[in-house]
Length: 149
Image (cartoon, rainbow, N blue to C red):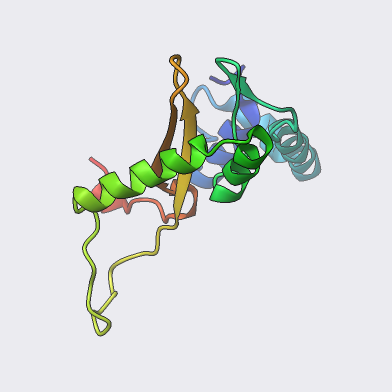
């Protein structure tokens, strides 16, 4: 892990302070020079950007965005409504299975956090399109230390 991703691991070591423990000497060397560490962090982030290339799966162009706009553009370009039908099927299934509970307007939201919903898209080997309604986990606050076991 240290050879594959040393910069995030060094960031972890700087936050959790295991730099004095055995086996973390390499991280201490990187973390000591603040400017070098920040430069490495910036260059690492630059290499992990999504490519702007078009993605295909089983010969089907995949929507690049997690909202419905990218899928609607592809439907319009292809002259069909397969991605739209996939979203409708997912919305119908979610409603039928009573996944969400509608709360009254005066409900106290203390202790809850807002999780935006996004669609993820997939193409199956037989030509079907699938859309899944999922919570965007990037925007949630991580678990408390007491919740981890």
